[in-house]
Amino acid sequence: MSIRFRTARKRGACLVAALTAATMLSSPHAKAAEPSPPHLADGFGLVVTSQPRWVDENHRTFLFSVSTNQVPAPTLLEGQEPGRHAIVVTLPAGYDPSARYPVQYYLHGHPDRPDALWNQRVVENATRDVPLITVQPNGSGRGWYSNWVNPGAAGPQNWENFHLEQVIPFVDANLRTIATRDGRAIVGHSMGGFGALHYAEHRPDLFSYAGSFSGGLDLRNSEIRAAVVASELNPGSGTPAVGADAIFGPPIWPFDGVWNDQSPAQHVESLRGMGVALYTGNGGDLTVNPIQAVLENRARETTLVTASNLTAAGIPFHLSDYGDGTGWAPGCTAKHADEACVQADMNHFVGLITRR
Image 1 (cartoon, rainbow, N blue to C red):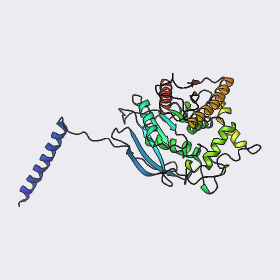
Image 2 (image 1 turned 90 degrees about the vertical axis):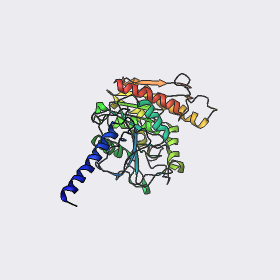
Image 3 (image 1 turned 90 degrees about the horizontal axis):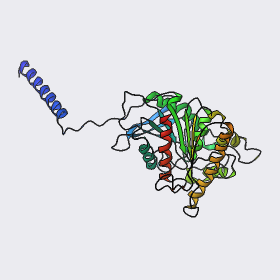
Image 4 (image 1 turned 45 degrees about the horizontal axis):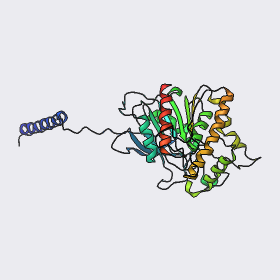
């Protein structure tokens, strides 16, 4: 075969390939390329142990995992892997990778996880038409969004360091965020509601808005202390179980100084100048689903203590105290983990932060 013939055949093959590609692009039946989630780079003490993957065909929410020396070995719920922290990110519909977006951090409750389907539904429903990125980091079944004082054999459990000093700058470095206080909000449900106000009080330089959905906000409340201790001892909160003094130390006077110091309800002063929103029901009919009803009823008491302290300090805030839930959202029964209630909470909170 002559060199001229081989060259001509090669050019012809290239032309055919180009024409085929052009035809596919111009065809009304051509299938558009699926968008890829971003590729993430290690940094800020985090090592990416699995790159992002879409959780479904809607291409709005992706999941990845990291390891950290701040919590190298979290206690594990079923299906979780040692040393790997799942982080879930939800993008707005119509996400433009050339734009920059504000971010809300949504902290899950106990014993929940960031990749639970109900958390995905709540976030996606509330943010579908809103230019807002939502990040849900792993907080463990019993992490309580705190640096533990007596982790013992569990090893370092510095959840606050992990989230505030590692996850936030990591997200800002890898995603198209507005990496300022004005572009950042934090909110959580139950244990996560505690975490959101706890983090906002400790680092008011990071957040412009903070919210709590039925959070256990008063660590001076004996019932909340009992709930925290139960989460430490209960294998259902993660294995292995830990000691009753692992997170905040002994829960009894005069050894309970950490409990008192870390209680969001009594340390509201640093929230001044920040938007604050509190949401709670009363549990509804306490004879129906009594455990969830009582949990919500007690969380309400801690929310009202927090609201009272905010009022006394002259700090503006929003409070949705929606009673039995009938006037708050269709299907809301004011139970502690009622998806309809939490969905309405999130819808309202997203409205507040985007208007601000």
